[in-house]
Image 1: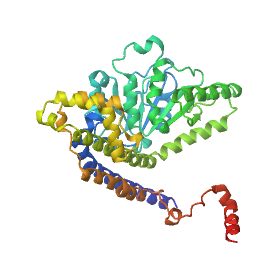
Image 2: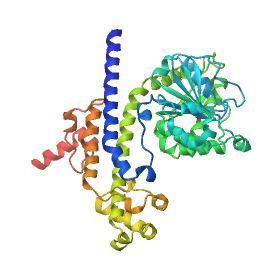
Image 3: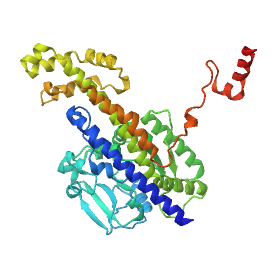
Length: 439
């Protein structure tokens, strides 16, 4: 039985690797050339690197100091490495990626950002000041074969947050969160106040709210009645910052191997510990689905971008093209940008949610150094290629991922008759109505 499960697991892993290769092939051969042609990096986002694409699923731990982030990584990796610095006061002063390797060791930031085996080349844009505060810890831990953890410095409060930081903590957190597959936002059950810097960090996580989980750590240190109050206060604080109708999933326990102080909620603590481990074990599979989803969203954004910049290029008056001077062209586009975007949306049937922000695009046009006449001319073939990715190639990829399948019968299920609710149809009221009409 165990051998059957192992062989099934190996087969699923092989299928997932095949899907990942096809996904990269779609991006590298179809999407990336159009990004380069339309200067997508300048206007929207840098290209995806192969190292980032092939990276193991990453779990980012964020929280204020002394909330147990490093202790949680120690517990999950079952490691007592001396590189883990755990103290009651602020101790972890670096971003630390915990990765798999045969021998324990530390790789400092400048070297880690150069290694092709690690997906951190993009951190070079933050400069040597930040790279001096980044390192990769290599551990021979079994869980790290499938997952990478990123431990972070504790978020400080008051004037302390402005001392000794030569980088923008919120921007680094946003970069990490964008590439993470799961974000664990840790809280100490004894202190739920949210500092200014922590609020900034939580605000940059709003676009990634779907992969954020809250961890109420050290929960065994308070009694049952106070734990209920603390849990409610945490939900209120997090909801106030994220401003989302959905309540974030909260894991309540003490994530280490020490015995519990208060035993009132031992069952809850153990269940939530097991739930964390289960979610991490499913992460390689869910990470693949997220990569497919992210690439699909990127293709939609690239499609809109290609159409928009092509339309802007086509609307440049002939006399300005003949002059070839970039200044008058820039002035024309920026002055008429709002109406031009509305026209492009109407002519091409673009969704409002996919359209670029007006002021952001205006700023990008003003900073564009290649010359606005180098913007690509409209090409329907480019749009068709992206449409083929969305309509054919992505659905084919999804069919190759284990656990994702739709039967043809489910897609052909009859819809309820107009004016009849689904519940009414289920109870048979719609059928009785039609029988009376037939009679």
